[in-house]
Image (cartoon, rainbow, N blue to C red; front, side, top):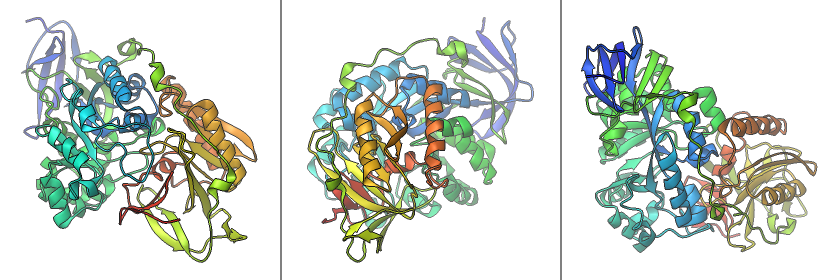
Length: 551
């Protein structure tokens, strides 16, 4: 047989049987034709190198990169990621069915293997205003799409536990498919009921003890390492001590910015960090490949076997996960690989920022005695529910370097809703940041130390129709337009990354702690399904009791 390419004399990582074989891999028509010893004309010498399956990100919101699926592909594939399982609930919260159509079309065009989960929680809670509905009835038209694998993270776990009608319809619709979970801290009988409802995975574990309990309850665990939420260090040492659980674990990034991907890598970083923490390198690669493919029913990838897709990563070093080259269905991932251009974005996905009655009087916070304060935790997206006395004047909270003012403005339906609260640990001084990236309903969130700059930053977001804005002393220091649903840029990934880097440097000059990402971390402060205290356009939400606090 004439082969398209032969990878010669490599150390082939057999993730299924957890061994390394010195062998050749022959590729024909994008598939692995055989593993053994072959000869042919197109030979790639892999002597001394390691050959692994392409890496799989088991749960990612492409929107967090702020790049279109085409540009996202260019960012992650050189790091060895050849497949991702995307949950587009950011886009769908803004534009519903139109967003599903956009992401599936874009996924089909992208060189990266992109599979899609149907968002389950639109909106995630009743304590916020989002842009569109996405019901079980809406899902029916997408369920049979070849790129759709199942139901996206079920964030509204209190609704599952109380068997609310809408979420139960979605769970019933997706029986037989993969159903992703999202249940930080859930344990005991509540965890058991959540799993019995059909939820199969979780990516919110922040300790091995939590992960182990969920695993024993029947869940598969996705160990996350993103830009804001970093859980590998807290979970992997437990897996090293109890390796019998590794078969039930895989990796994801969830939310990772382009600059972090460029500087660290993608799933390759999860693998590398796990090895540094003592995990067997083959086990780490297995989590990043075979375990994910098996969990999500992706039978053509995740393992180097005859008949499987030739999604291949060549490593100079297995221990340090140094990526030498990447192949997708037998084609090398290089400049020529990315020649296809993305289709133009439909107008329906643009012009999504509509503000009403933005004024300082809407963001005043009464400060009499101890009041609720959102306490940030470096390196985490969970927060503390603090009760503290804050600086004030004439009975109203006045921000300083310790306590910033956090605000959320509704931007979808023209309600004019706005809310504000103190946040501790952000540290911005002499300015404000605003963004339309505010998980998961994506209203406009802003933080600053004075009302004038906050309002100016929010108005700037409306002017650029979504994105980031940084303001100091009434002057706009920089913007990053995200015109697709207020979440994605239409520019090349490198340009987006450059814009982010420039804004980051300017943001840190305003006193924001370098222990946090000024933009990503801010975006999570409006997410009312992550403990313990969050702010939405309707007010403060106590996530632990799942209640909107009275103002």
